[in-house]
Image (cartoon, rainbow, N blue to C red):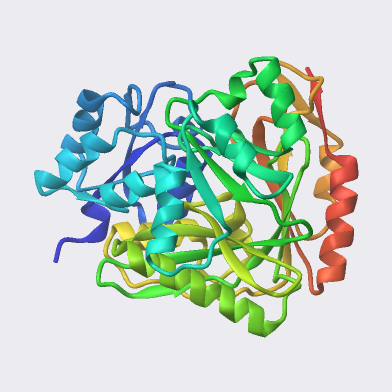
Length: 389
């Protein structure tokens, strides 16, 4: 069998997820090649084997693949047809292109759940042309409006009322025009949001991480922080893992998947969305789990056994994002004071400039109890400030 460190992994995208994938593989001297339009992307800080080009450019994707044995991606917005062509030419792509085709389109995602008896919130699909009629017919005053394609990091998702939609319609707001159409979804207040990271090996073996609990910023619609383990009962945690495993198994593809779920006040569990890659909700695994989500993906791509996913101690991870009033080059204020706190791990992504709500990094807190984790997280959040240089 070919030695794993002689295999070159090709990654579409050179952002922070690709950078952390490289860092997880460096102890075994794994080899990588990245495709990214910016030559000074985060992955370039750790890997100099890069193809400069866009993720929709079929020729550049083919150039990347020529020097690689297996292909994956760190972002969903890539050229599916180019990936399918690679598969037709016997190049391994994980997760498979047909999985990405489903996940790229939130409407296809929701239909996939329905077709496979996966619990998900009620929804209807709409085009831009008939959106007004669809909204008027929707039974609830408040609902979630999602772009079927193109949304990421909270963009393309709105929780609105019918009267707010009418205002957007009156002002001809761009958010209610989308060539790929919309998902109108039931809004459920006071839900608990969790994520389960699931890994599928090339031999079909499946393992999952325990659910972590996510809290979102209402302004940016980004994850503010996560806590692991979740506050849910063991019974509900197990149900979340069972549902997450079922939906990932239904995709029938090797890969790493982040399954986001809602739990309502009746303890009913619903799948929200899935990311076919490492995810914000798995950053804590770098320090808190025996095998991180990044090492797990490396193992999957190199056809190695899956790693132990056990959580070693309570943890919290908080996003470091650009404040709304700072643009351009930046510094972290109070860094020495933050680093003097035991159990704090800071990851900066190497982005040269900040803009409102741009993800610049994250920090993880480890401690012996969840109470200590939460207290330290609050302390670091208070101290950590992004300021102009």
